Image 1 (cartoon, rainbow, N blue to C red):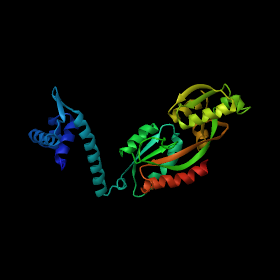
Image 2 (cartoon, helix red, strand yellow; image 1 turned 90 degrees about the vertical axis):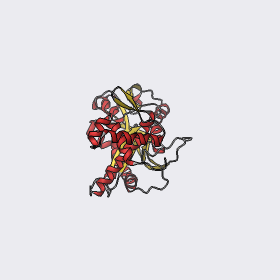
Image 3 (cartoon, helix red, strand yellow; image 1 turned 180 degrees about the horizontal axis):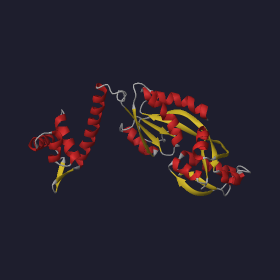
Image 4 (cartoon, rainbow, N blue to C red; image 1 turned 60 degrees about the vertical axis):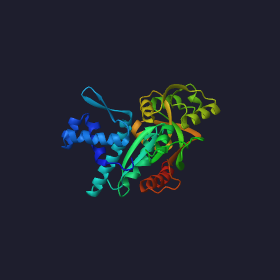
Length: 301
């Protein structure tokens, strides 16, 4: 099909959303016969059926599901365009889709990304958490504009993207007041056998911590592992164990989770990267993120 008929696509999308031609007819104020005819023309132009009839309802075929995803994106952009033309202050900058590697502390992610909300024209920021591999896959098919990561693109990973280092932070151990008093006297030797909350194996911080423990001859008692950094800190606040976190958010950790710094894991550091499809960053919101982060992380560390 050389040209897409957007009226046909709208009828299709409405039927897919409402679940039947009758309901779509009421929504669009168009006769069911008209919608049926337009759907038939769309299916003929595509060359494959878009719906299967199940009972009295319609269910999307595999092709229909794929077409509907594109339709949702197209009409979502149409809404943004309408808002912009109407002078809506929240729409001119469009949408910034950001992927956040789930091992990055939420407080760090907030510090890095928040400046994007200050740009003009303003943008709507949509954040998604996942593994680095999953996010890079979304970046490759343009579902994301940026990935915030604690490590660079893995060697051999076939994706056209570029690393932009934002900064790094020293890592220290934190614990509730009771645990800090009990295990903090002879740091770091007292960590041997101490209850420890750790990020999942495979994360950049976990690999660095494992190496640090090995070099120091320390074997902690790992009581739990997490891929969600906020949940890890919540367990730390409850006194379930000692945990490692960036010094860049030391004040927030102490204020929010009421934990105490026990000592540094020197020379372990956690680095932060913005990964984008562009070698040279141009989008105003992304430039605001990277430039502010480079200054702010140095001040927080």
